[in-house]
Image (tube, rainbow, N blue to C red; front, side, top):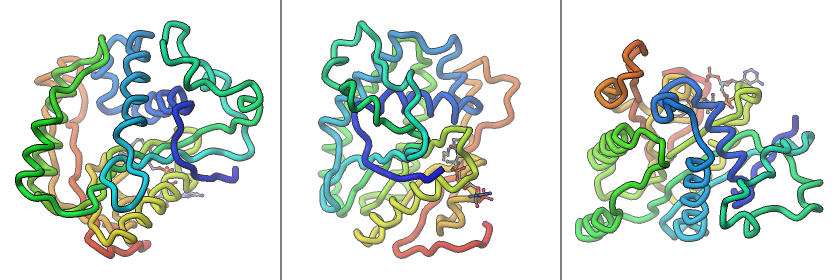
Length: 261
Ligand SMILES: CC(C)(COP(=O)(O)OP(=O)(O)OC[C@H]1O[C@@H](n2cnc3c(N)ncnc32)[C@H](O)[C@@H]1OP(=O)(O)O)[C@@H](O)C(=O)NCCC(=O)NCCS
């Protein structure tokens, strides 16, 4: 399974949803969509993410914004379901691959979403960005209260640990379960570390229990265990073990090692 990395494209949106569903089938996702994801949810997600790809991306190391990469298996054709968009989606024709491109499409097996803030901000810039962010919008059947609470907790933690300093934030790393523990996550992390090192900046993330050992190998250090009271927002979580995230920071110039945290 030779794996390669490339920048994300709008046609990757169905693969992205499939990978999130598989990678986060435990954890919070079942409580975010307690009744499953409907077509309307999918259309909402595709629309939001397409807008993000058009307006929120960073295309160079000195431009703040998102950097998104996918890993794909050069030996395996794309899943047929990854090449289909809902009939009712108004942007379907804009993003769908041509028949020729579909024949050559490879299976997407992992995704990393980074947020780059390459230079320090003033308090004024920070406040302006926060004010411009506006309220979160959610898929119609998503548990919005839970998503808002998580977002607030993570925003507060980033404010506490990063303040106005530059950073590279790993917002999401998710690998198709059939491809986990084969080095795909590491390849995507290597890509991010190259950006952080080129920019000479720290990198920040909130680790799940399963991700934490890998991040420690990449030089990320534990900062704080965030206990998230999911049951307050999602009664369906009452029998779950505690939902915890470790805030981790890889200092400027952090080094990869085989050691464990
Ligand atoms: C966490 C996650 C992103 C890691 O991705 P991955 O592709 O499995 O990562 P890798 O294969 O590069 O490394 C994972 C482990 O497999 C080991 N590994 C890598 N290649 C291997 C191979 N060929 N054979 C055996 N083990 C291997 C790594 O050393 C690492 O070990 P460690 O966990 O003891 O540090 C993935 O498991 C995932 O998507 N999990 C669910 C979603 C999630 O929790 N994401 C993290 C959010 S913070």
